[in-house]
Amino acid sequence: MSPLSSILIGAGSSIISYYAVTILKPRLGYDDSLDVLGIHRLSGTWGALATSLFADESIGGTNGLLFGNPQQLWIQIVSVIATAVFAGIATYVIL
Image 1 (tube, one colour):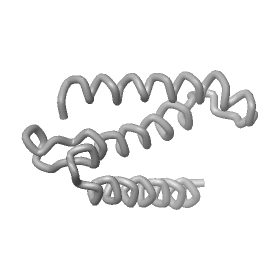
Image 2 (tube, helix red, strand yellow; image 1 turned 90 degrees about the vertical axis):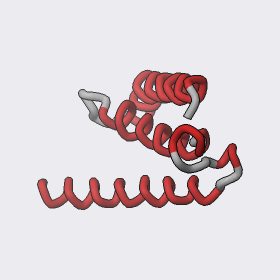
Image 3 (tube, helix red, strand yellow; image 1 turned 45 degrees about the horizontal axis):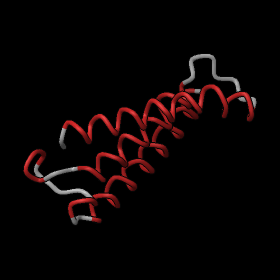
Image 4 (tube, one colour; image 1 turned 135 degrees about the horizontal axis):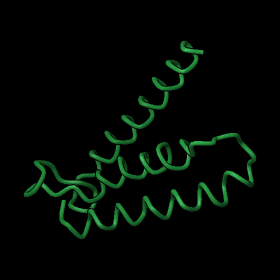
């Protein structure tokens, strides 16, 4: 992944976090004093998916969607869903 790609992912993450915390949370009215949903969940999802967009074989070993490998995006989507399911089940068990 090139430095410009990393900057784009970071900028996207910052924008997502900001709007999730300042607009989404008050609008939906959920209780999240540490802003876990807006910062970790949404920005982490963006980061995982964006990595599969910008991945470059010459730098990281496999190409992403923008370099002709749409399968990598699918792999990341499945990974994000699996992580969400695991976190949900683990949270339920802990509670």
